[in-house]
Length: 234
Length: 324
Image (cartoon, rainbow over all chains, first blue to last red; front, side, top):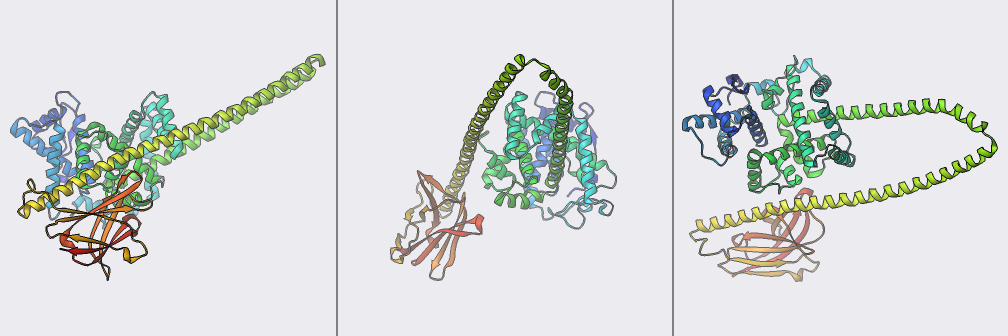
């Protein structure tokens, strides 16, 4: 498994987007961004979304380092793009999926696939299945929880008031009451239930990224969140 | 490509790794290539995590969630985030409820304090010719408002009943959608079995295009107390497979396990899990297909078990095999 120290934050000056690790050159990265955009300029949004989906995909396949595998996939696509100039596929996402499957197959064939990287070992202590703070002696789980809550409060203040209200009203209540609340909220905002759930989901993702960044920025806490956070946290 | 045909239940099963491999692959592909599906997947995942945090997951799903979903450190972080979000939302809801109640009490008491003295003074200062009709009108208004209150309550009850009926319909629709998804999965499984049979035949030198496998269909009924009712199944030498059609009793899980045991001695000779039942009108049927080479000329018992309930046997079928 590639150690994280190989990761190089590369600036893509035109988009402001950074790749999590260095492609073999910056032109390849720009080419990849343009190819994923498919003619429109998403300001790197398509790249970030594809990377997020890849990380989730490798996570669902129980891979030890989903971020590394997502980057490996995009790396290969970028390399192919630069070598061939173009890729023949119904959509960029379909091609990325095919490459991801190959990356997964190779990962599963590796005899050392379950070995943890140095960073993983640091973050998980002696029990590979459990994530623990880097300096566990200094931080109790209550403190950790309080920290998370205060990060969330801070992050909630950073979102627009209408989005904050939406999140509160969307998640308040239990079972039937919650369903009723959501129905009323959708009617009030003149949205379909599906559109409401997508909007709530997007706000929640932003909050989650924000909380992960906030937690990792705190001295004395594990870099776990940093390593595993989504692309928007990069 | 199939779009939006997947119910939340199927997506949930996908998230906890409980779907068949070909269906998992299809959803894997959609999760990367279909924007709409990718967003829905995220939304269902959030709901699943929230249900876990609120202690609303049960049974097999809870087990799967804890053994499969929580195996990932990132997913455990998602659960922690969901706990914090829930606590924050609950805390705010509680604070708002208290604030509203307090405001309401303060406002009511302030209004009523100022009002009470002037109202009483004014009322009893009126001459009796005005006072009595005024009191009669007040009494009438009181009765009328009580009647309206009762009507309002009745209408509210009617509305609640209509809503409940609506919810039942929505639930049924959701279940039908889930059933559709499951049928698709069952169909895909059957297709895989057929492909496997074809490949086996090809390997044994026969062409699947020219020659179909020789399958003996057998209908078995649940075992009764009398052993004399044992069914005899004759298997010709050229038969490749036996397909047992079993009629199931009672209400039951989605997946079944079939175990074939030789008699006497009850030694397990064959076993298969994840078999799905088919419903024909009011009867539930299970088709269990196995190779004839598994069977010798002797008595057997075929047990149908519930894998979710520690493999408890739901029905058993005895029969005698005679190889020709």
